[in-house]
Length: 207
Length: 182
Image 1 (cartoon, rainbow over the protein chains, first blue to last red):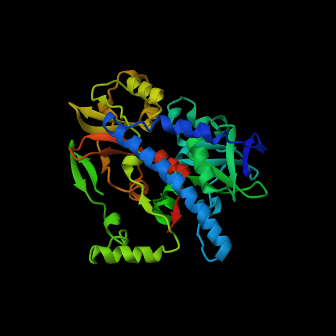
Image 2: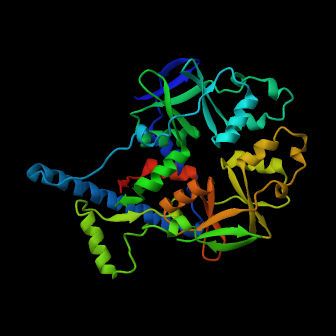
Image 3: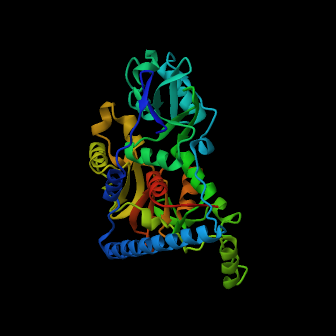
């Protein structure tokens, strides 16, 4: 597994819960209008039929490939290193919270990884700061009192699908990307994935 | 494919320049007879034997939509968001949409003393981008990125809201479906 959780400077593997759970959650929000329900059932049925057809086809294709070796299906995987935005703006552990808030205004970013001697210890988002901005001692507080301890971090070789699945399941908006020496080299946010969808993919579905 | 913008409490059709420019619809070039386009398209993708179908907004949108009236208080909106797990709520006046309120608008005011007195009307953004249910998801994604928004209500032919597509729905599409590179 190429995913890592950092908590207080230590790393451990992150295991995503089963696919079936994530699917169940996604079904909850997708109930349609009463009028559309019938249509949706038909759509589901069509999909089931087509899936069964598709498997038959693929068996046939694989036999054909073995026989002739001509038939090629292009399918490239997209990895984190292709879509991440880098270099990232990093925030040191000792900076003041008000400075971080100014940086968010200046660069129009919402997430900054927090580092201590080039190693990631947390992440800070604008939601953490904006809510507590009206507190009296906001200007004197350091960033370390706002930071969420546990971060989920992906490696350069993580697939796009995996990142999207984690974002949906954990309800987060950004994943920092680290290299083999555990240094932060980039970040993948929701907008990066949207840009990837917009530029590289036709939203075509195999039926 | 058509997008709408809410101006002065009225939905007006609006075509974004970046969607109409360029060769977005290279598949169905209208200057050529349709049969010819289809042949070209099939030649391009001759190595792919299966049928190709595009994903539209109405297949991915989350519905039913939860609305609030103009005079609802902010704690009510917060409770609604927490209960149904949504971050954006359209605001209606006599059944017609007049604005949208998001999660971030509430977080700013949450710790202040006026939170429980303010109405939704004073916080909501009156500018809203909507889309018809026939726009494809790559177009929706482009509008999200260029306009810096996170959610977009979907309207039917009578301009009534029937669903919402958020950026998380597009992530879900990336997870659940197979995609082909251009």
